[in-house]
Length: 158
Image (tube, rainbow, N blue to C red; front, side):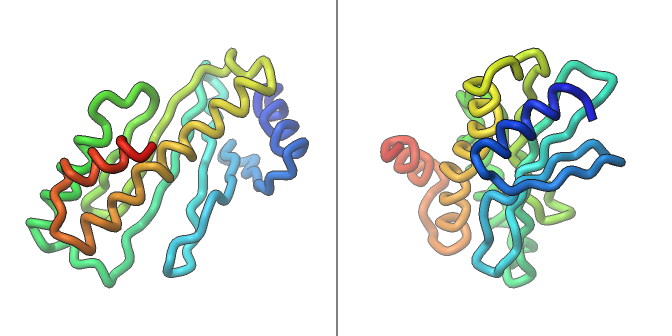
């Protein structure tokens, strides 16, 4: 385990945030929520030992009860993700159509893990962005509202 991961873990311990660390894969896992179907939503921090960056990835898999073979629903999901990503300063959403996964990705440089403030920012920002925009996915699935109107409401309310 390298010094930067140790600093992140020290921060998590000081804030009493539960985590697990896979030493073989160099992945730090933090549960940030539970879906309505009881599945954990996990923030994963990937430590690329030979690179100067970390990748943070938060993923949510759609349940089998959602008909993703509906072309209109897929189009609306893709438009929503595109609109959410438009102008986003840090990180981005992606939609893995084959695996039925929505994912938020954020990269940050290891040299920014120099203080508690920047550690908190780099770990917390993806969670904030994910939680802010993932609410709209539910509206896309359950209503006929346009992706544009859903994004406008989310960005106005926050």
